[in-house]
Length: 175
Length: 178
Image 1 (spheres, chains in turn orange, cyan):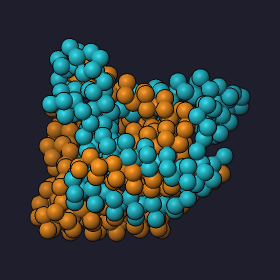
Image 2 (cartoon, each protein chain N blue to C red):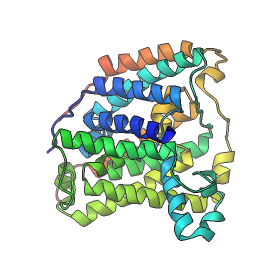
Image 3 (cartoon, chains in turn red, blue):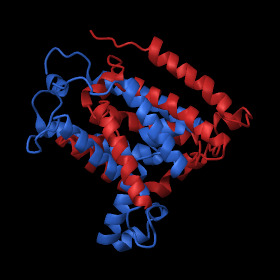
Image 4 (cartoon, one colour):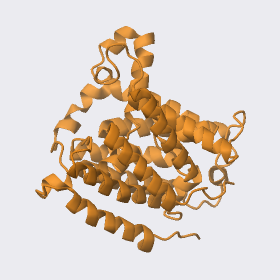
């Protein structure tokens, strides 16, 4: 049952992302070159909706949250590595799955590279312990840092800022 | 040359947000990169069981009892199906036998299919190495993590865009000759 639920939600997510252009190399590189804001706006719009929804659910104890630990040093280094892969491949771990389904051969190579990279990580994982254990602040959120009981009071203004950004501030720049 | 997306970022962002909220209400927030480890674990447990069983990291993931697929894996498989269906429905499917090369990549680097595929592969290695070190990717950290106001996810988002923007600029700096 849970497997079918995953399949159903995943299918809907995949279709929406594909139709929104998230699996397009041109759109992703356009975002990183700060010329075409479509993908950045799509991500920020998604977060603006999701953050309010999740924290509204949390008010009635219906949000199955999954907070990842914040280990600053490891996450910064991880992000720098990820960012190079993002620009070089033109995909991310989810969008290369979408693009592979569209028949894009380069995305299939990114998918294979991803499986290789994850396996590589599994075998060097013991060496990564210092990066994860140093500067590890645990499962902290803006709500816990600022001692706000109901995260919705942060989620609403945060969402408003994001909406302002996507509707008023961010503009495409073509040369 | 690709056309503009079928759905605007407003509609796609709204729908995607609603789907992530639904997933969080029913099961958990949405994430992709863990499933690469689950896939590796399934493959390795069937091909090199000794190496897989002694690996601390692989043992953290997957259905330990039978090394089969779970909810998260089906979600990513669903994403593959959903993308394929919508691409077919909107006639954007590319023929599999033609190694695809993005047109803007060809303009910058020339008509070198092998070079593009190698770049795509190496990019994939870096993506998943980084995502596993961080504990999530664009979906788990950026979308689900920032939506939950997780501090580390903001850090990850800033770091990937700083690095991605710098790398993209380096790759696409103007060249007098290619």
